[in-house]
Image: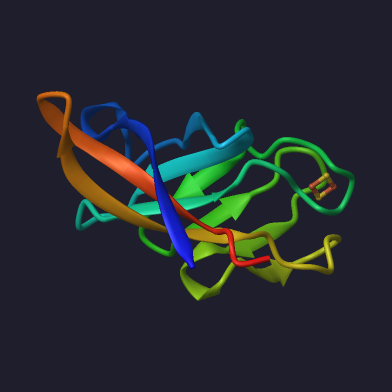
Length: 114
Ligand code: FES
């Protein structure tokens, strides 16, 4: 079952770089596409366990480029590796935008069915 957690106000998100937040103890990145839709994915590159937060986000193609060894992940396609050296995908998460504490707020869904 997916449980949604409040993450960040929508107004803090950008098309040009990912924003970092903590969701139930996990570091998650949020970024907008060119239509203003929110995308959420883990702030960790599985190649060498490094944070992705300083990576280049491309809103037009929904790709995040790891700043360390330049792996590219396709956030719009389940976090699949588009180019190496990483060989396993990153986790992507469901999002919802809701009214919360008087503002538009992004919620991130985590699967707690384990
Ligand atoms: S840590 Fe991301 S490609 Fe190496």
